[in-house]
Amino acid sequence: MNFSGVAASLALLWSAALPAAAPADAAHPLLQFAREREQERDAISHDAYYASQLNRVEHERDQARPPADELCAGSMGAGRFAELHMNVGAAREGLGDIDGAIAAYRSAMACRPRSLQSHLQLAKVLFGTRDANATRAVLEHALAIEPRNLEVNRRIANLEFVSGRWAEAMARFRYVAASDPVPESAAFAQLMFWMTQRRAGVREPEWVSRRIEDHWPRPLVLYSRGEYDEADLVVHIRTHEDESWGDDVVDSQLASALFLVGEARLARGEPGLARQYLAAVVNIRLIHTDEYQLAMWEIARLNQR
Image (tube, rainbow, N blue to C red; front, top):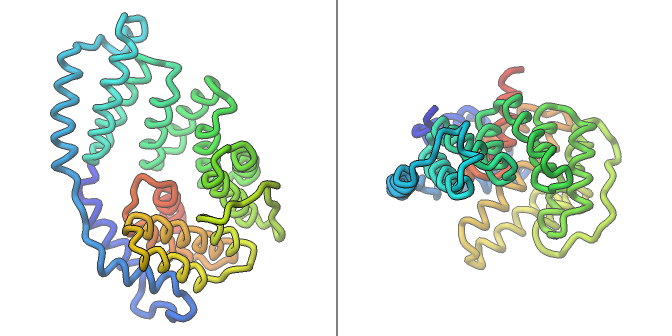
């Protein structure tokens, strides 16, 4: 499986999701802002970098002569072999060689069966292929190793969310939101907890009792509570654009806002409009983020309908 044509596919997705009779800009300012930035954004290829990296890390791995996967865990250099396989997996993932990345990460897991890092990397790639069963198998194995690990629970919660298993997703997101010591990532778990309840039909979603910091993603929390509207979100994100925070920060915040509003539209029974917001998330092309992967799952589910 090679995703070298992903940029062209995303462009098609964007045009298909945004019909000629697009919603009024005044009513959907986030979509307007996304269109403006889409026209300015250039596709950036990192193929040359990852190709160079792949040559180097594959040479290092081959020089080390790792044993076959079934023998690696009991070998003297198991930890080093696992690291070398992980490096190859990361380079192949960067090039869009998904099958090669999966094979390398599985080899790393074979060398270090209790390494959460290799489990999480493999689960991330499998989640991107929308293989729910394979992703679940890897994450459940990781959960057996460390049941209270926050990142493992977060990944399982995402999987339950896209599978429509709302009660299971709520429990996982609640746990992460309450336990994560990092305020920003805890707030994102809070938002997913809120969204899951909305998607499940809960009229007045609960919040985990903890302080939300004044910085991002607080504006998204205010939106979810009805204290901000889309225009307020755009003003906040444009402020960072004007302050030259960098395109990566602006695009990251825009993707999060589009995803949240798209999910809210789905919860309100507006799948056509929701699809436009989710397609806008995809076309920002932050392919390693949760928002991108979750949006891809949601669009696939909408297409199946």
